[in-house]
Image (cartoon, helix red, strand yellow):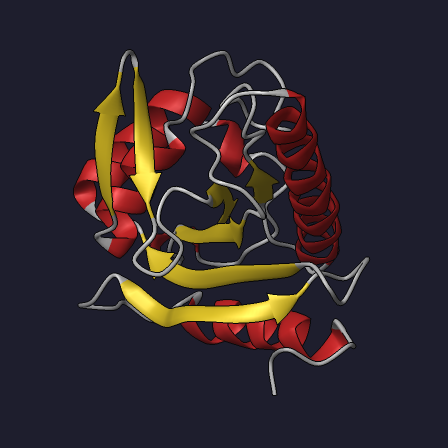
Length: 193
């Protein structure tokens, strides 16, 4: 059961999936379909995650954002066989995030804190195993751990590419539409190499 109160089991799923696919080429972008797990800090906070290789369109975006920073600190014997992986995450918001008001801003802050804790813990654990890993700050679109990166990653474009989720334009913003939660969704991404 992925929604257990323990974070150990879902983390092992991440590690085992990443390690298993680190040197195996895949013909399909999705290595692990969307799965709902409990946050490591609070079992009531659920995070949907999946594991993907990067399609060409997203690989270009990744290199635009990170440049060659993702190679720093990688411990590997044969980097030609390694794959760059994306872990898109989504959280169901308690309110529709398209709305405005203090309660919406508080909800966005809550979801941000849940993801930041999740992303930090997962990236630290993966880096300790010799992987390069970084997570995107959903507020700025910038990497959290790689220094010197100033290009913005679009979470909505990434979710469209990796998960075929739809979006719509609201003024100058693209709004992600989760197939179950609609626009009450908070997307954020982790990358691993």
